[in-house]
Image 1 (tube, rainbow, N blue to C red):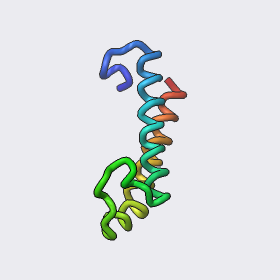
Image 2: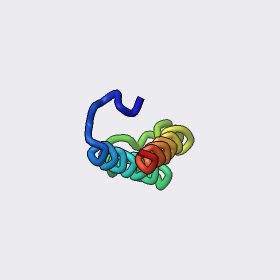
Image 3: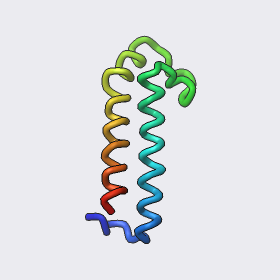
Length: 73
């Protein structure tokens, strides 16, 4: 599965680390209630509630998963 997209291993590893950093920043901004810094206009009460309960934890899980894959490859 790792070879589904042909790329050099160092390119794949750097891409996964960058992707992990983006997801981690998004998750941290969501938990801090500062998502509007990255996405202006996302400050409705419903979105903020869902952001803290669903979207931010999901982003942090995706960040953790991608860093595990990056370190394992």
